[in-house]
Amino acid sequence: MILLDYILSFFQNEAIQKKYPPTLTGINNKSYEFVKFIAKGGYGTVVKVKEKGGGFYAIKTFLSIQDKDDKEFEMFRKTFHIENVVKAYSMFKTKSETHIVMEFLQGGDLWDNLYEFGPMPRLKAISLFRKLVITIGELLMMGLYPSDLKAENLYHDRKKNNLKILDLGGMKDRTQENEETKEIGTPCFYPPEYHLQEKKQQIEYWEENGELYLSWMLGLILWHMIVGEQKFICSQEDISNFNLDIPTRILGLQGSQTYYLLIQLLAKDPSKRIKFWTLHKKLGISSL
Image (cartoon, rainbow, N blue to C red; front, side, top):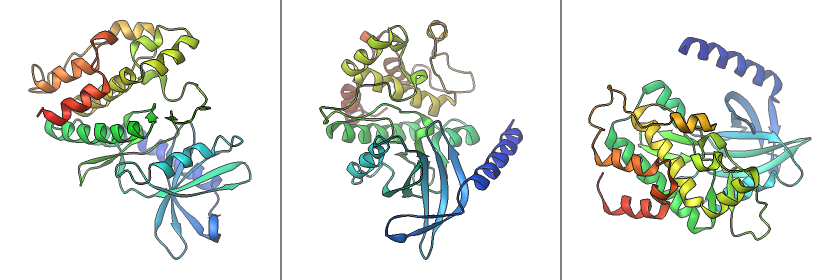
């Protein structure tokens, strides 16, 4: 399976390299030379580049959609001072594409690291989780709401035991009165009640119950880190089959305070789920 993934990644890299311009010219005539493909998601492609006469950067490229593509860079600009959000330095456009020049982070995202190295020791996972909750609290205090939290959107610095939020494309800005209300993110990582609503109700429920959505998404991330399994719900059948059964290989989790926290975060009944700011306070005053 790992060999197959490597082969597919190799050919994807080759295809991106042939399609991607060997050199891009950004603002102030800065020239960026293509080095290698990093990742491709539903919204864009990220590559590693070398600035002529400078260092390495990551450039995220996606199709321009009128002025809407400026929103993500605006989010990066607003969050530049937050330590655990990836930094973006400039944005420029070429024909039909938008390019965001970002800091290059050596290593991979949290999903890749868990896939390669397996689940983490509980104390390490809790330490990372606490830092993530603190970062999200900082964003919320600014009126910014991360609606696409998942392992693929988090950079994992293994040496420093740290997480950084990578993707701000799913950020909602509640300080903007004319902010368009729409579904942003990955619905399969939304809580069960989302999938039991009609489309219009889903959006309304999201706006009114954002703290419960955040807790659920964070619970999925914590479960992924500790157990090594990525859980998600994409249908009502998935809701029925959803459980918190612990694999026998994961020792010491059952009955621990961490497992109790997971039960609170991943409660299918939203009335029993811990809210984000309650979680924030809990992590600040207790040792799990």
